[in-house]
Length: 172
Image 1 (cartoon, rainbow, N blue to C red):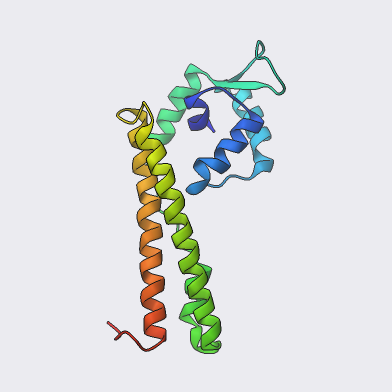
Image 2: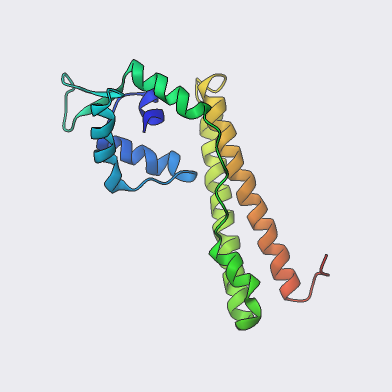
């Protein structure tokens, strides 16, 4: 939330929208946590309510202490989470299901990956046209490219898996 508020002040509702529409491609946050987390950040002096804000809802802005804390958090080492892919779990045990069911799962994975690729390409074009593409925009572009390459890889895998399942490709 500190990162999102570092872009610009936002209401809790707008923060929620940004998490879904922007960060939601790679980070998920429980909506029930947003307002309690904002209250906690406010108590810690990391965000402040803008009392002069017009319109519904309270506008929150990051404070200087919040920017320092954001830099500290971003500098911390991170550990990649252990993968959890329910499709791959089902594929691994695929010999227990009908081949048509497995084909359906793979076709759905392919369709989802292709949809994601198309969505990422649209977002990529928007970022590349933005006036800040040479500064802040390039970091959004780098993040988006990770999603795009991941979706392309998933689509390639699904196609190859369907070919192997249909006996059209040789293992290895």
